[in-house]
Image (cartoon, rainbow, N blue to C red; front, side):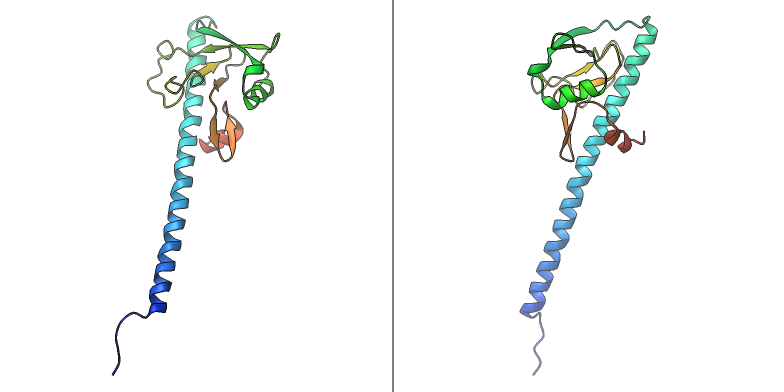
Length: 158
């Protein structure tokens, strides 16, 4: 008499296969979510840089935002490195950046830099270079980004 049904070995193989597929899908979706957030951040910084450039052109190259004098010794080392890489002027251990006024530049939305998670959750802009910096930093692929760098630009096709 033949018995019909699933053997224990077949059941174990099925469970292992389902587990592997679940792990692969979870890891892939996690990477997709991280990459999407990085694209949003990069797009936002690029848009802010464009809006600020346009604003300055309309206002005789004037940037009448609130100045933020930051002592570089109190900043995260990664931010200081990026400021130096981008050619920002540091005088007496201070750098002057400007808090972005979203209303003045006609920015319609923002995901980051809204000062909802503390005083470091803001975007600042350099009057000299036009670079936008996210004071808090954005973590992606084991790196922290404070401004739009080539790795992030590639995500948005720049």
